Image 1 (cartoon, rainbow, N blue to C red):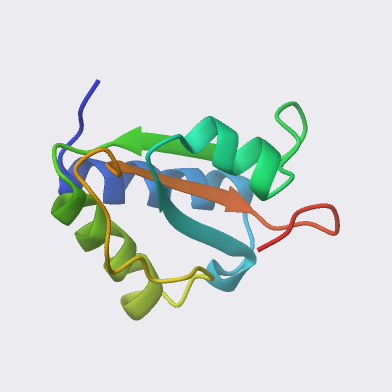
Image 2 (spheres, rainbow, N blue to C red):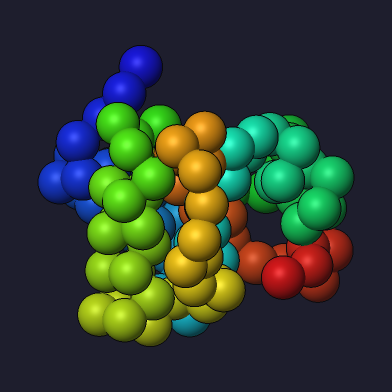
Length: 101
């Protein structure tokens, strides 16, 4: 399912509130394959770590969501400046001792 920029912001904020911690305890990124990125690249534990991803309509929409979380709320993450239209998923996870940025 594809979500709007505002809906993803709302969903991610609600998720962060549910699991607690400061915004800098979370990593927000973009990916064409969020499951691979979360579980293989960042080593997020699918069963015990808080994580979520949503698909946007375009790469630019995904960048808009990420930019909000990085610039306004100061979450952790690497700004993604280039990508194709397949890079349309935004993901968030709560960092732990096991995860990698």
